[in-house]
Length: 251
Image 1 (cartoon, rainbow, N blue to C red):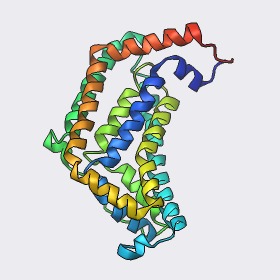
Image 2: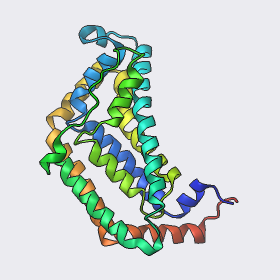
Image 3: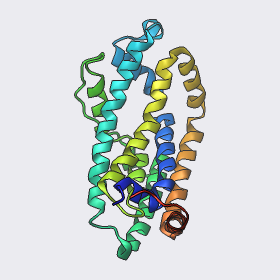
C-alpha cells in the first residue's frame, strides 16, 4: 500500500501547495508585523540587546532562535494536523463547491493582508511573557504561534484552506504547516548567523514594506481566484493524470 505522502503527491495537490506554503511563510517574515520586531526577538531569546547582541556568539544566537522557531512550528503543525483532519469531514469529490467557497475565503485573507477589514487588523496575543533568554525562547515561540497578527494569520489561514484542496488529511495539513514554518523560520536563523549583515538587509525590506504587503496580498488573491474559478482543481487533476500515467511509485 502506498504511504499517505505518496498518495498525496499522486493527487497533485502537494506539488502545487508546497511552494505556495513556503512562499507564504517567507512573505509573513518580511511583513510589517514581523520584520521590524526581529531585533527584539533576537534580544529576547538571548537575553541581550544593542552592542552586546551584535557581539554575541553565533552558537547562543542560533540556539535561542532555533528554540523560538521550534516553539511556533510545533503550534502551527499541531493546528495544521487538526485542521486537515477536520477537512476530511467536509471535502470530497462530491463537495467541489466547498473548494470554491474556500477560494473566496483565501481572497478575503489576501485583502486582510493588504490592510483591509479593520476588525482583522487587531492583534490577539497572549499577554503573559516568558523569561528572557534560552529558557524562555520556546515559550516565546509558542505564544507567537498561538496569537493572531494581521500579517501572519491571513497567510497561515490561506495555507490551511489550501490544504483542503485535492483531498484533505491530518498528515497533509501538518506537512503544509511545517513547510510554512520553514518559510517563516529559516530567515530568522539566517539573520542569527550574521546579525550585523542581517539587520542591514532588514532595513532594505522595511523601506519596501508596503510593496511587500501588497505583493503578498496579491498572491493570496490570485490563489483564491484560482481556487474559486476551478483552475486550481484543473491543475491538480492534470498533475494527478501525469503521475498516474508516467510515474510509478513503489508499493
